[in-house]
Image 1: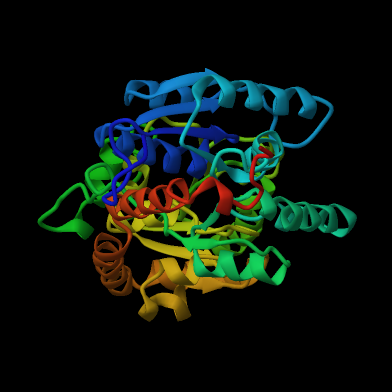
Image 2: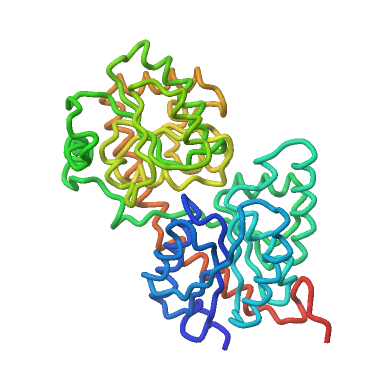
Length: 397
């Protein structure tokens, strides 16, 4: 059964192939699953059973299958590809939606255009490496485009980067969205007056003096997210504001190394079941990433009424209100500029309040998760209604 022109619904099956299973990718997938299940779509999520994603999507009504895949290509890749082929043969989806580079790699090699395949990079793989590895990653993406019914980028900047790398494929830009029912100010009548309430809700912050400047970073602890840059900046911030505190929310492969070099004013909160209270407790949310497609955490922070400071990577400019770009963007990797911007923003409470309100309205008007889900439904409708003879690599008859 093919979907109606209104988009997929009952009788339509989508297989989400996902790796990684935490962080922003997992949140994007969970939000899509929720919308698709609500629309009556049969949703199957294949992913590793490590991390929170499998349990989260099962609770939303999706079917789940274990796809035991690592984050990077390795000796297990042939078995991972065979497992995808087995799942596709058993599930018989109308669309395969592969999320991030590893799933895109294994999924497209397994399917090879036999089922309409949507690939969503969530930041290009060739940005994470350099030299020969980057060249190989670019070459793979150019090759894999022949088996891709649609590449979905989360920002115009991500699409442009793919085009500059020579990826030639049908494109759609679908911005990440935020669930405004979950990420919202603690006090709807006065969004910026809720910091104290936010801290009181978190036992590890409840004893802080109410006027303590608090910076929060919510992200996986890894090289991409740049917490090492933030910690270098933090030593400079403390010279001007020794009373300030920094919280790193999340876990990841760099956790031990980051803890070893952190000053006492830094709290490592670890992985938490709900990040929303941490945004509400912050005066400023910082994400100094080395690369992104469009990070989800800044959108969640703005939906919570908080000002964000970002490194100027793909998607950052698009996510911010235009009036904030001069003060809330720094060059990637520049810890001195990051420190200067943090100090300036923390010292100007009026500016933080103004930016917080601007960001809140900006996200509510532009980055609603329902808009994201509707745009993805349109993508599915378009690729699933293409006649087999017109697909990028038809099945031999």
